[in-house]
Length: 169
Image 1 (cartoon, one colour):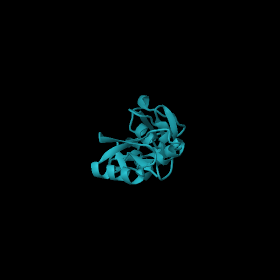
Image 2 (spheres, rainbow, N blue to C red):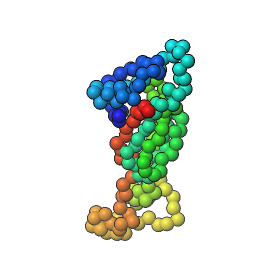
Image 3 (cartoon, rainbow, N blue to C red):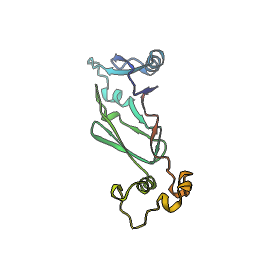
Image 4 (cartoon, rainbow, N blue to C red):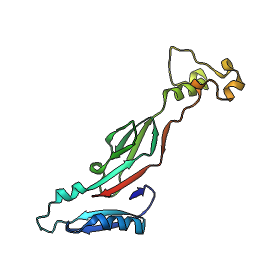
């Protein structure tokens, strides 16, 4: 039931609400390795269309991130993710056709400072009241080995995998 964001086949399933789509949706996804778009058609049968819409859900899963990310879908913030599981419901923000996904990830402060330590003073991004320790201060051999634990680059960013998860109750 996980849809990769790469180009995949698409199947459109039109139904009037009486069909049990929970079984057929899974079968179409697994059998054809396709993204399934379920379309509810109002045929004037007094079917509760809002109840049908509430059953569909699209979740964006970021896999693993370090440490904070804000997700935007079509220019609207879906929310900020800062702890596991890095998943967010984007059902109400997606629309038929193409959608724009933007993920802003905050880098770790220690990585920015480490990058600045390796840069010439005029190319540094951060201003701090603490003196920068440079390779020269630590000795090149010590720096090449990773230097002091405090100044090693930490895992940071969007590590993924990123998936859209389609669910229908």
